[in-house]
Picture (cartoon, rainbow, N blue to C red):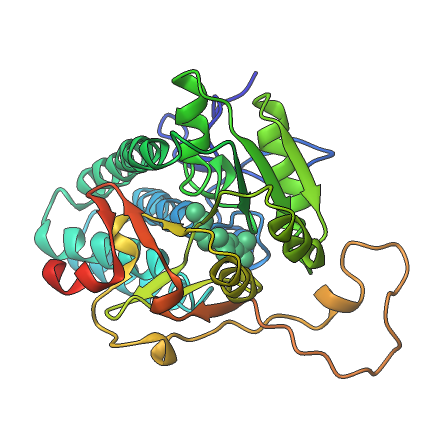
Length: 343
Ligand code: MRU
């Protein structure tokens, strides 16, 4: 019996546990993990058991609520000091996705505002984050589906679907909503080296939903675009600077350049909170670098590259704003030139 009922992360308030699907085991094993242990929570995000910017943010909110509610003390100052300490540490876990920082800052603000009700208030905020994420992604889906009305095939990179948020996802939300509205859209999914989020997660969730899905190697994107099969590119993102420069999974920049070359609209689907108005442009976005073994060994039984070879394992890249056709958010479709209005 599933606790999460189709969601990726959740809050078991009866037992005060954070719940998540371990995405490193997908697609072969569907495992729900219940935890109130900070080490396990941190590792879940660091090792991509919970991944995807919105999911990381909401999960962090749930974890904070669990940890503060687990504390034996009822003294406000003790609890607030604990909250501050955890938030300051957790934020370092994955540096590129702004959603982690956003969620931790929200929890911290709520903690500051609260007094004797800090435990209850943090729990309520975590539950609200879960509901809000579902509503926001639904809205993104509705705006995006509108743009896809005359289209029958899209390409996506990495996984920005259900598994990257609480429920609908961002980049795949328009596809799900279009399907609900009776319009089936075919999806070409980049496998997304090195951790294969496209192959393991996007293909898995779309296939489960009965969406016509074709998995392609990352280096096949140009060929399918050249063949005229793709009418739009939909991707998610981890952080967008004030000028519209967009950080997303490594390889997104290449896809955006290809889309520009072939005259295909390139849409970035995201909660509005993914805008980081504190930074002027993409050069200020910290790009996470991950373990070289993800490139040489990770998903294979045998090593794929010679021992000692130099490896550069950037987890994200930055797509310059001029390559983005529009951002699809819960507030509507925003062109890069319109961002200033929202600051
Ligand atoms: O390293 P990951 O798997 O967390 O990277 C995920 C992505 O790059 C997603 O496209 C992004 O977080 C948006 S998810 C809605």
